[in-house]
Image (cartoon, rainbow, N blue to C red; front, top):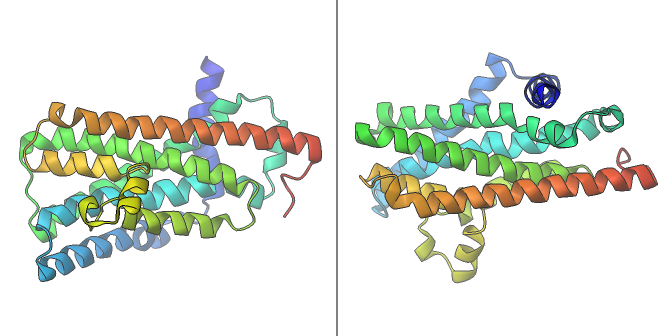
Length: 262
């Protein structure tokens, strides 16, 4: 058990730092904090100008959604970059527990997603007048943790696909912007066509954002337990699908030696 935890925590952290060697303040701040900040301001002010929804609707939606920048992009790259940088072969040759290796990649990504989302909520308070009740803050934090976990698990599936796909950056970009459209971030699901809202309900973010909006409006955590449970179930489903695909591709690589090929 101790060895499993070591691979899960220490191995995941070291791999994240090695695969993301560009992470320095000069790069991190404009990329991971600057972009979410301008997204928040743009959509909130646009929505206010159009008198479409309330200010808090956009602040909560975008503050939760920006975690996908870390969770989707970061998790996809944390797995698929092993192949890109030529380290996948040694990794698969190691006797380390595969679940610890796979899931451990998500720990730093999850922490980063929480930081980005917390920063954006703080910006909403400081710059846009977002004032949730103090009693709702712990519930909002719990919802964000579940939602970031769900996005990270979705990134695990995309990363596993990237072990075989040639252009996984395109898939990550497409997924991120489709989630912005399909998950009710700036447009209520009720306004979207039926097929779009149906897809949105199968994606991460959708139920977490809905729960966060209700809590910010004064609802209790128990009142949105169903939405949180659905978001957690989506996280488990995507994590299981990603790990299963990872194992299938690993076995296939041992048979045909194509996993490292481009």
